[in-house]
Length: 402
Image (cartoon, rainbow, N blue to C red; front, side, top):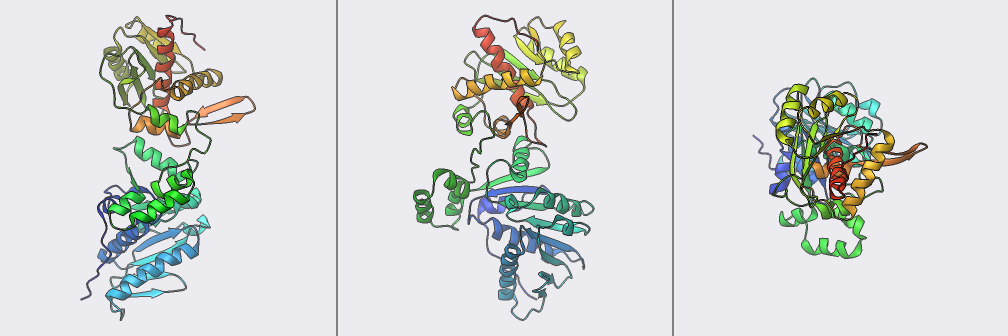
């Protein structure tokens, strides 16, 4: 009997690769152990799978990078079993077969069309931020019938890529089906993987933005965020205690969330709730929550009759219709408040929404929206509350309906 001894994982590394959720996104610094940890995870799953013919995939952007992982896994197995009694490999096709018959394949994500078709029982997408999103779509399709887990790992590369969007989704929905983990160079130092002086030297040698991405797994602000990432960070503080001075409410549409954001007189978030449900339940909840407090509520589309209905019970409710010009004005007001430090927001999903939020110039103006697949309900609710607070401060409650 061959005993397989794999490299030990430090605490955060183990928690990241052994996340109980099927999908886990791991944004990590260079040399923080993301590759080794996921190689251990994938080999362990294949080793313990007693079903012949099951396939496990390691997918990297190009074959040369997959070869590095292939050689490392072979080295581990060769050390445990130098005579290949319980494993074999094929250097050209790049697969390793365990005695049970399960195979670990090392593939390239360069051509997504080559990744469709097979049933896969576990996968790792290595250096995923350098991989096309279509490759992820292809790999995801191979896991459908098997309901198998996948680990998506890579260095941080700005905010305009599919991995970061997936990470933002995971952070904004902590109870969802996608796990998120960050491994920094300091985590690796604590875990004994990197020497502290090496990280300190990199901090001195590299530009700050580069060091933050490569060693702290912090994406640079690549120009698409209207609020400013550093400005958002300076506004992060715990939810304040006290009374709500104004409410901003963004009503759910389709698969979105209804979000109610309450600010105190100093612009700090003192209440923040989001939910999905029937309109009748939403109305009951809002009536109970808002009472006589001034509130500015999204009245776009299906929200119009909802706001009219609420106004029968709530004396200080106003409606706000979202159009391209009105949303631009609303978001510019929120951007000014954030950049001037006039608002306080809690860490967590709302901060993630603010950081993911983007804009682009079009021939008709500026379009503000969340990236595809993400939500901006919290951003809109906060912006409505900030706008209403500004009117309250100036004693001008004649909120225009665009």
